[in-house]
Image 1 (tube, rainbow, N blue to C red):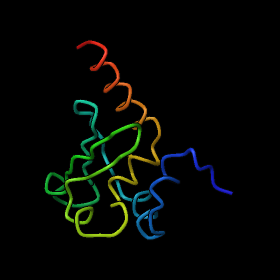
Image 2 (cartoon, rainbow, N blue to C red):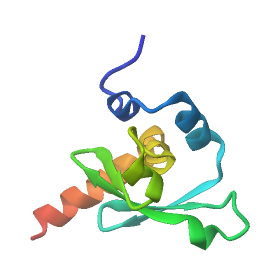
Image 3 (tube, helix red, strand yellow):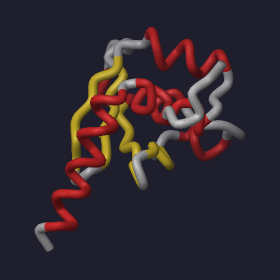
Image 4 (tube, rainbow, N blue to C red):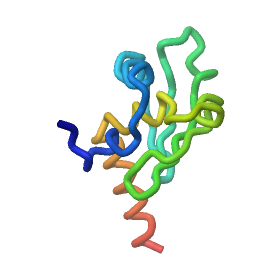
Length: 101
């Protein structure tokens, strides 16, 4: 049984995308409540760096070509969703910025 309150359940990724999100060497940086995802699995990771936009506690979009052209979420969005501490930190950053305005 799946916990539908988990972000990954709400994204419902393809199995191959979920596997890649789990095993590829992703690095994460918080940027204004969003997450910059770099894939260090490549020899030139800077060329595989994309901004994942977080909204209402979910990774909603990514700048990568796959997220634009595929039916389901890309591996970068899924990578953020399965790492709840990163997602929670991005959401907390957004909350803090809205309360300080």
